[in-house]
Image 1 (spheres, rainbow, N blue to C red):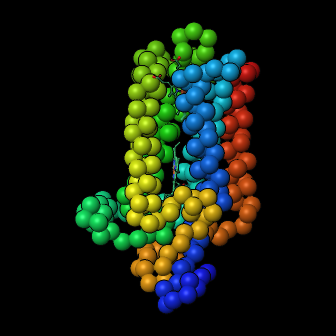
Image 2 (image 1 turned 45 degrees about the horizontal axis):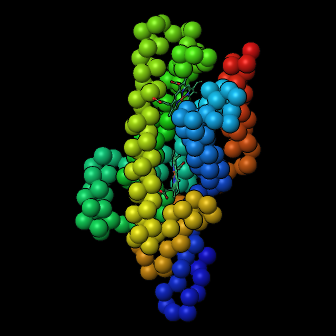
Image 3 (image 1 turned 180 degrees about the horizontal axis):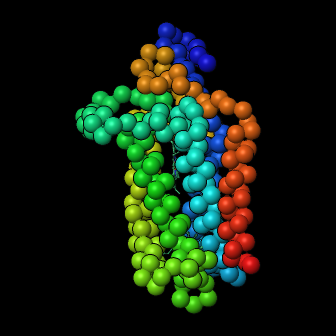
Length: 238
Ligand code: HEM
Ligand code: HEM
C-alpha cells in the first residue's frame, strides 16, 4: 500500500512473511533461549534436563513444520522461491561485498542458504539430543535404541554441533544488524509481516506476496507438529 510522504518518492508496504513464518520464528527464538538456559544453568527448575528435552522436541517440531512449509507453502516461504544456484549466490555475495547488492523482498540468495544452514544445524542438534545423556539422571529417549558407537558419536555431535549453531546465529544477527545499518528494518518486517520500500527502489520478487492458501493447510500442519512433539514428550514420561 503506497504511503504519501509529501514528495514524489512514496513508501510501499509489501507483504512478505505470513503469520506461520512469524509465529515459527518467535517460538524458535524463545525455545533456543530456554534450551541454552536449561543446558547451561538449569537453576529454578527441579528437572532442568526434562525441560531441556521438551524444548528440544518443540524445536524438532518447529523445524519439521518449516521444512514442510518450505516445500508445500507458497510466496516467500517456499524454498524454491529463494534458494538459487551457487553461481547466482556467488554473484550476489560479490555484489554484497562491493556494497552494490540489489534489494530482495524475501530472503536474498545468501540469506536463503543461511536459512537452510540454520534449519539443518537445528535438526542435527535436536536429533543428536535424542541419543544424549548428562551421565547423571537424564538419558535421551532414543539412547537405548542406538549401538554404543552410534550413541557415542551422536553424544559428541550434540556437544560440538552447538558451536556451529552459535556461530550461525551470531552471523544471522550480524546480517540483521548490517541491514539495519543500511536503513532496512528486517526486524520490524519479521514482527509485522510487511517490509517497507521506497517507490523508486528496484526490488526483486516484490510481487510474490504472502502465502495464499486455505487456512486449513497450516492448521493441519500444526496438528502434525503437535503430534510429533506430543508423542516425543510421551516417550520421556511413559
Ligand atoms: C535463536 C536464535 C535465532 C534463530 C535460530 C533464528 C532463525 C531464523 C530462521 C530459520 C529464519 C528464516 C525464517 C524463515 O524463512 O522461515 C530467520 C529469519 C529472520 N530472523 Fe532469526 N533467528 C534467531 C534469532 C533472531 C533474532 C534475535 C532476531 C532479531 C533481532 C532475528 C531476526 C530475523 C529476521 C529479521 C529474519 C528475516 C530475515 C530476512 O528478511 O531475510 N532472528 N531467523
Ligand atoms: C535444537 C535443540 C537443542 C539444542 C539447541 C540443545 C542445546 C544443548 C546445549 C547448548 C547443551 C550443552 C552442551 C555442552 O555444554 O557441551 C546440551 C546438552 C544436552 N542436551 Fe541438548 N539441545 C537440544 C535438543 C536436545 C534434545 C531433544 C535432547 C534430549 C531429548 C537433549 C539432551 C541433552 C543432553 C542429555 C545434554 C547433556 C547435558 C550435560 O552434559 O549435562 N538436547 N544441549
